[in-house]
Length: 185
Ligand code: SF4
Image: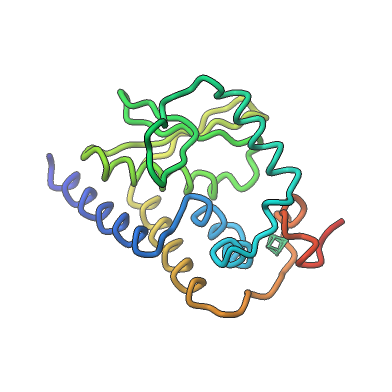
């Protein structure tokens, strides 16, 4: 292992240990890049996801396309869509390219956890169903920096007793919390 690889592994190890302490999950990482208020609601188990038709349809689409996939069987506390164990690649699917960087952060988060679990550096691949395009995600310093900043925000939001103020953004349109925030169309 080169010194660069060793440094990266040590940094990923420290990141994963901090994520464990914070009980951070992939969706928290994705929300952190989109909306602090959405992230706070999810962290404090106050999100309206359970009642969201969009989310229910997303789960259904995923179940339909991966009905026989067993690549993630046996994983505990980690929910990537698929894994290529041989190549060391996490594969995530999204219906659209909206908030692509946030989705790439989520996929990178799973790759970081898989890297720790297996002792080799994983990468990720994001498949956008709408455009039928793959986007490669590597655990390069810029991506790891984004993940570390996401954990900073998650740590702050976990401690915060009040929900951050609602500010309208384009993501409100498809957000399960938009009625609660007053941005339902
Ligand atoms: S509706 Fe908008 S402001 Fe409210 S949680 Fe969702 S994205 Fe954030």
